[in-house]
Image (cartoon, rainbow, N blue to C red; front, side):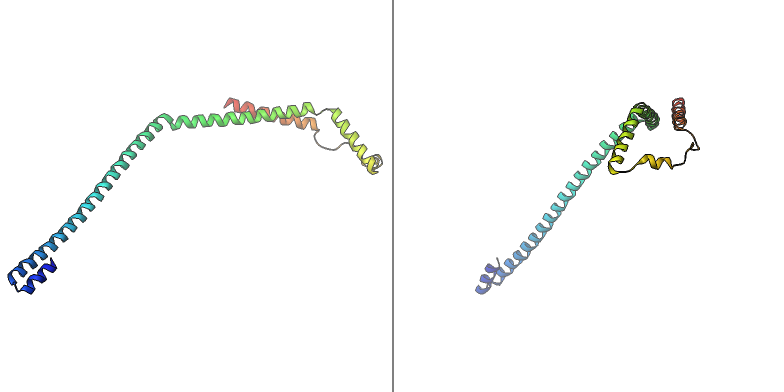
Length: 171
């Protein structure tokens, strides 16, 4: 259009040149308006997408809150606390029972034969390396050691464990 305006101006046709210049100005204004409209349409499309995303998020949050509400109704925090306390009580009781059983098994398996075999093995090893334990033991002090005997200490531990177990059963 600029080239046509230049041609008409060279021919000396002032009226045609003016009309063509006005058309060029209007054309440029229309192009600017179309570009502005296009930008507005893109803005509207972006806004619409954002609104759609917000709607999807809102519906997701709604579903999640319904699910949480349903879980809260089913879980009953007071009931869960009671279950956990009962579990803790039973676990402690089981620990004490296991400890008592372990002590009983250890006591049953500790026999004099094993001690005699251990002493013989130690004596054999000491004889091999040339240590005479009998001569060293003869110079050791003789008599009872003050304090509780091992058997009464073990029975006290068992009695104490049984008392704890009975106390847990009563609670």
